[in-house]
Length: 371
Image (cartoon, rainbow, N blue to C red; front, side, top):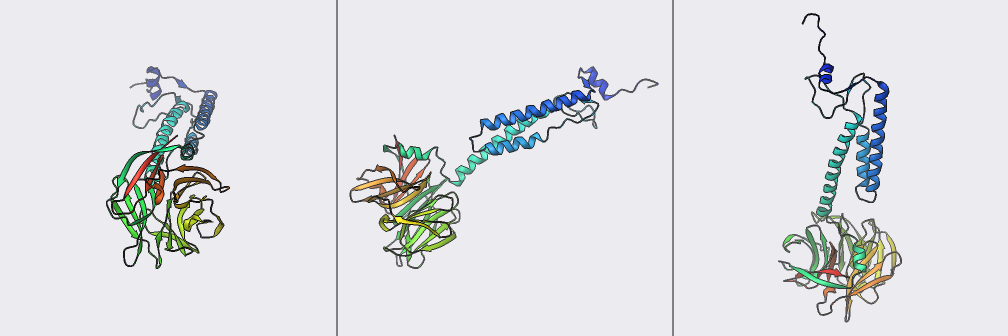
């Protein structure tokens, strides 16, 4: 009105007690201060989490958000915290310190979500998720029975057992059918219900053996039912039970393990020979088995060792073999009365699972490892 000075947005801020800064040197100081505070926080958080599985991802997230810290060089900067604009078209540049607070908040949310996602994938994917499994086996002095799972279908002559997430996988051969057939069963591990099955038979190759899930595939040997016979090594998708890749070897392979890194370990008939291949079927090594008199029925790769379940005569045991020098590191003697080592065995979530008896009415027996 009249010749009065037009009110500005700054007048409102001054009356509200919010300071205005017009000094470029001060702005540069604030920008530099906030930048280095953000950088120090990033380094500190990353060092705290350096041994964790998500530390690299967290550092990347922090580095990304750090690039978003920017104080605009403008003659009027309001030092405010999450204050709404005074008018529809007005906007308040946020200080670097406030940006840092926003950055830390978003990073914590992102990190929490990422950790939750990783844990969920580990549960759904079925990778062995136990803490220090090798140490638990090495320090094991005895087993304690904790439960059983009754299978509600005929498993025929059981050969191998594996667990991946909420599902279990059983290999078996039906020697009473005509013709004889080899089978892969997918079960719900909570109640033993049959979810899916697949005929693995390939001509005379009717004998699937001990198997292992390596985080990607189920690796299964399917052999002719005789000594010194041919075997097809198959990689099976655990969801569809379809073969993804395969190759043949000239021996009866009764148990197979995978390190998940392009190495497969297979034991011949009565575990007399041990072979190492890559996923393409190229033989890396072949040697006399370090089984020390046991016939292994099922084997699993576990932190640089082979966890082998077998028996011979009056001995029923689990062996732990070092794959770097093929030395027998430990033998756990099992109760001979139960013959737990007759057929399928696996290690999952700190427990040993055994499937020793044929169907019908097969049961999976669960044991904890005691020091």
